[in-house]
Length: 475
Image (cartoon, rainbow, N blue to C red; front, side):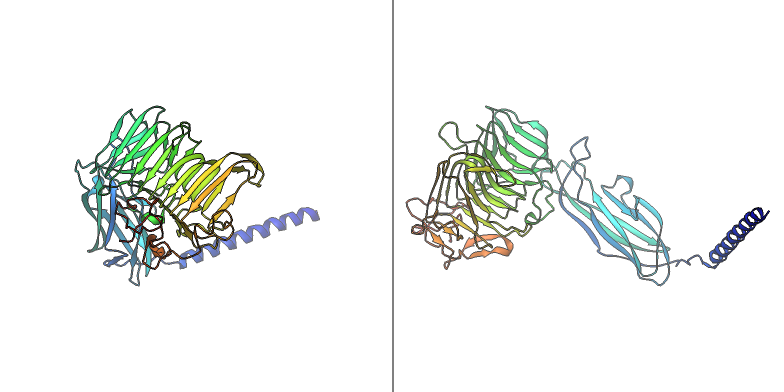
């Protein structure tokens, strides 16, 4: 009987507790007032215009590409709540897309904004082809209305028609020569073995994040002093120096050939990689008057590669301006190797030369013969030593050098001190903005060897009777 009574008392206690909880909840709920909304109010956009610099128009029948997303705030400066309505004036046909507090337009109703609070606006743009030879300006507007008062936000974008290449094997003896309309690579591009492809002067190429330009045959990039070839990531709105890894870069397979002149290759992961040494006693890849810059891992890399470079700039990579792995055959004349990007914190030099291949623990896996020649080059950067040498004595390692400006402490025995200039500042124009010309007080000024120096510099300007070291000639 006692147990039974205790059970009744427990049930009674629980019932009383639940009743009290329900009653207190009802009392609290009845005390919360609905906010009062202001009938008329002016909202404030954080900017009066959303502007998209040149973006590509859509590939016909595709959703590609779409712009980056712009973010703005919309502030209620009143001391009362407001309910705001938003409307794209171009309606459902507008190329602009908006989203406010997770709700998408073109019309968004009854967005509640607390006193002196803000909501966020996200804007994207996807433009249709305009059939124009030049970028075409597209304008729309977004209105924010509270009662009878409204604010307007201007939306503007330049749309640029393009040639689209999607996961394509490029045609034999094919040609890109349109200086006006850019070429956009979606996915990968391939040059098949024994096939030839040419890119002419003034062409602009943009590559998607998934793109690697695979060369198994022969690639000719024939830029000129007046009209350089430019290839970079497919987001032309971005500032070049701030965004590496926008695309994969060029990959030259064993036996492939490349002749590249007056070209700018930027924003890749590895700008150009060449695999396996020459098969016919000639260089597989020849680079002249070419810049490879702002790459996430390396500007130029050789894996037992075969590369000749003259009047070239290799600069501002996350790790290496030049990386030679497992030997190879390399010649550099009047080039500048430097690194001041700061988007990766380097602990080692940015020019790495080795006749070895090692695993992650430093264990030697393989070694092959290395032949490399440096003449009239600058190797410089912000570290005390910018050159890494790794060699094994039982495999040939031949390094010839003269008339170079070098920043190094550990490689003095390898780079002959009597023939090179060590640790004397080349005085670049402005390392903060990645400008690597020199002045008359530079250690590189009039210090090149006349007999081996090239006739023209990176920009195609004539060199002096007493030429400068590096890719730029002081004019």
